[in-house]
Length: 104
Image (cartoon, rainbow, N blue to C red):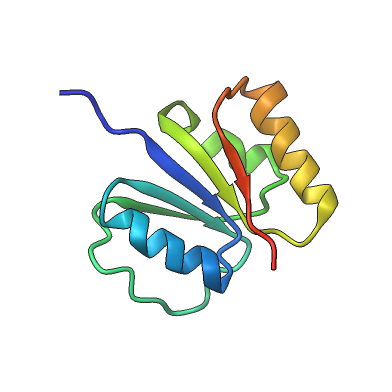
């Protein structure tokens, strides 16, 4: 049986946390935020990997299992960080997967 691809979330804003909770019911996920000090009930964490770090850090990206990712979802306010996230995904890791940004 093949392993299911994961959804990678950056920037755990209120809306992204809600979306992540819905995804966790259906598939494994990876969540990254610069500050994971907030409390949230994720339910079963068997299918959730949490990382603390900056989405624009290549050091962080090298720790992520990017080969097992099918989508990237982000909610980030800094345009430079968003551009770097996309550059790392496309140019450095050659990921040809959907990248979805959520703004409010």
